[in-house]
Image (tube, rainbow, N blue to C red; front, side):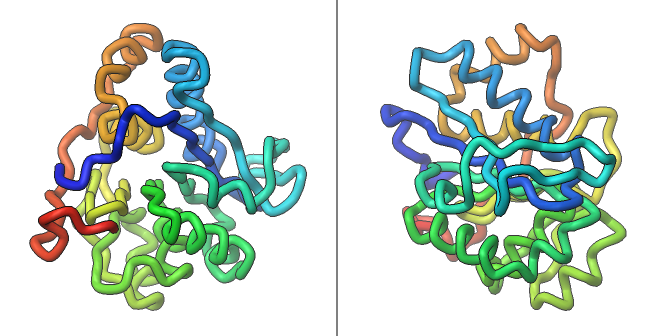
Length: 217
């Protein structure tokens, strides 16, 4: 894809958590990315969970302790935005919206999982773009002024989203590998070998025509 990020810099990744976040969306991505950190050079990949409070409870009842607060999201080069039962409420949380806008303004890439697309749309970062989302949440996305994309992994400049289709693989795992493909593609195979996981969604829609030529988002 175009507009590849500089890979020599340390890769700092924030994984967003919020009340009623889906645990599979959150920890599927976090597990892959933290494993990448263990296999990379020291300090090359740093992943943390960021949340609006010290602890949040996921939709399945798991209590998630955040490593850092929402202000840290602006320091990340990549932000993973999980979906969940609480996604619609989180999309209207101005603190979360501002954190995502700050990350976008700093040049970060945003990766939404399933209904996490609602948070990207709610922050006003998807105008004129398409996002993949859970098949049951397409109307909620339209209500925020964003058109749903076909299912799978969809890339629109610095936005990447996954959802809307059924595969044997896990959406959050697949988008974590897509993130590694963007920043540190050489790490993908070692992580697959260590975890004995191969992502089921590898191809995404190309960057839209208006984004060719090094556009920022």
